[in-house]
Image 1 (cartoon, one colour):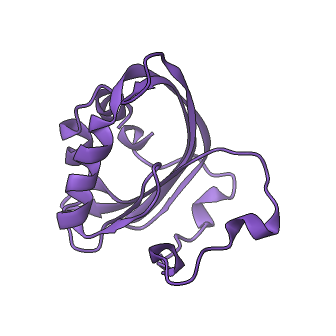
Image 2 (cartoon, helix red, strand yellow):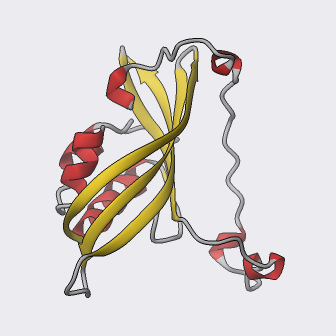
Length: 161
């Protein structure tokens, strides 16, 4: 997974796309806003997002992870020093990232990515949307049970870390 994301920030989405389920129920809340639903939208969104990166270095800070049955999740900070389209110099990018995974035919595949820039706490009114915007649509996702988080050793395959 980390190697695929490292390729992603060089503008190559292919390895990261291979980590995804290609099902109709996949979703992405991307780091540049908006969202996509279904592989027909998510696949091109990944190509578009990768094309915005012009190289960088990436580290991770794992915050939490867990699994239950055929579902799993990871939560981490992606810390990147990147160059992006429209910017000459590299600059810091820190994203809060949550991945949800589903086991499909014996392999773990991403079914959801939520990534957004880490920012300071904001005023309550700062989250208000203008009426009629796409962002007013709420997408509900199923939660994974936390039974594996009670001090037991992590059973998520290393490939997901």
